[in-house]
Image 1 (cartoon, rainbow, N blue to C red):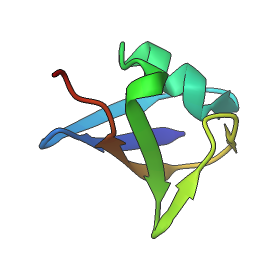
Image 2 (cartoon, helix red, strand yellow):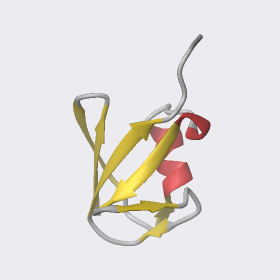
Image 3 (cartoon, rainbow, N blue to C red):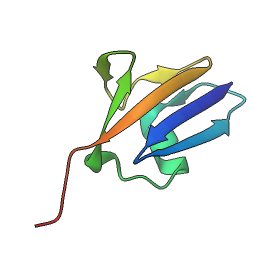
Image 4 (spheres, rainbow, N blue to C red):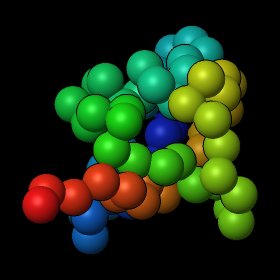
Length: 66
């Protein structure tokens, strides 16, 4: 299955052979899960959500330095 991610102006893609959680996807992209919200369509989805088919996600950064 194809996982497409929009993150900080970049389009990223990975392919997986089995179900995977959003949290595991973030780890594959080396994105700290505490710094982003995962958006599918117009809804925020939990990082525990299991992905079992092709999906397009948008990641919104929620933390910043100060």
